[in-house]
Length: 173
Image (cartoon, rainbow, N blue to C red; front, side):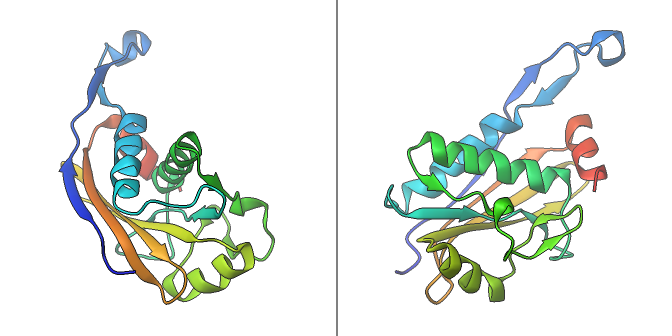
């Protein structure tokens, strides 16, 4: 399979939530909606077999590929959830003992591990991703990888505004 699709979007889904007197109804990014749209965009370019499993690795910090954060872990959970909602079979890799788990880091799949883990799970594809933090936004890059040869079959890039919620998720390790 060759690279079938690559798309980039800037997400600005703002909603007002009430967090009591301290929050004063501050605007916050709807991260769930942003991640669901990103997942839909990724799947648009690489239709998958609903009968074959897919793995979703924890998104990692682009500057330190062995580190993640609460943001990387929750984004991965939301992406996996959306894939299930779209009718795909997502294997819960946290339940597998043969997957490298780093304490407080989630399931980190580096390129050399993608093939090994996906073969053990008989996965047709693996979603991997990175995020990069800037002062005003977090840039996210998702890739759908064919485990045979580590070929990228679809990619999607997006960004979410840096707000208090995103900062808190990044601060948590």
